[in-house]
Image (cartoon, rainbow, N blue to C red; front, side, top):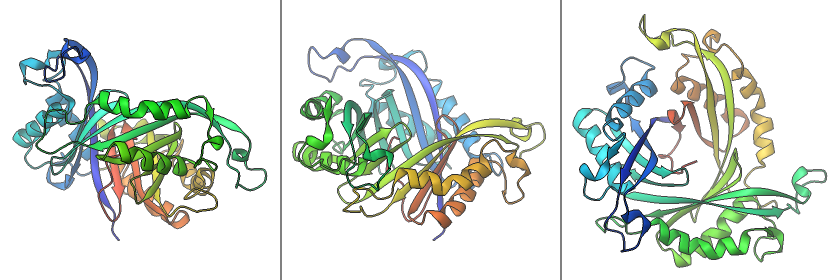
Length: 368
């Protein structure tokens, strides 16, 4: 099946706000400020990019221009209730007004590094909140000599994803509500050995995400998925049906866009520290407790990684160009040969600006 692409962009802004729809005494009813990050994902780049291969650049410039109207502003002067969701809707509406050819599939606003809302193409809002706990674990079923068979520990991170009510209040699920729901789980997991907790005798990232899903779903019916970070570069997501894992790495490469016009910055020889993320979807191995070993993903992909890292990519004859879509298509084709369960490749040239390449269906709104 032919892979599909989404172009992504991100732009930060600093702004003040107060949200009067929150209960009396809530801290966010007071005037306060945030370092926000706006994100968008768009399809059909051939209809709106400045030139072939410029989709990530073009979308990022469009987003920055729109977000500049929010930067260092009192957001209440623009809207009555400047919640993360309403800010995302404002950005979506501005795109529709100024760039009608851009088909947005997602608009997101992060008000902190661990908090945000994403709107999908149908206008459904998905709220998410990131939590951390410190814990030890070991994997009892790994082969002899595997490093994860030794007792060790992580600063685990969990993202709880939930669907907002369509047509409901400005905040049908607020972040404080998620905090209240998460608190008992934090008490149970933080500063513990996970193997001693019933149901977590084999505490892989996949097992932890499913364990949390089953328990959170009972107290949070709007739960849509649970993401568990074992380290900063790998983790697992469970949505009640499917297990997905990802492995992230960075590439330091020289690039030059062959199709950029003369005088454009992308035509010059330059470079990026690219973020590359592999996503895999597979049934869980009931004995091992994982879909695939993160270490195996790294080992199998290593020849592809070395072909891109610390390389002059503009000199590769098998690359159409050095834009993120060209790189993602090449990396995906190479990865399929060694990782048949791969379903998505993300490549970002700067924070949040790049390409998501995927098969079968649009990628979940997972803020990894």
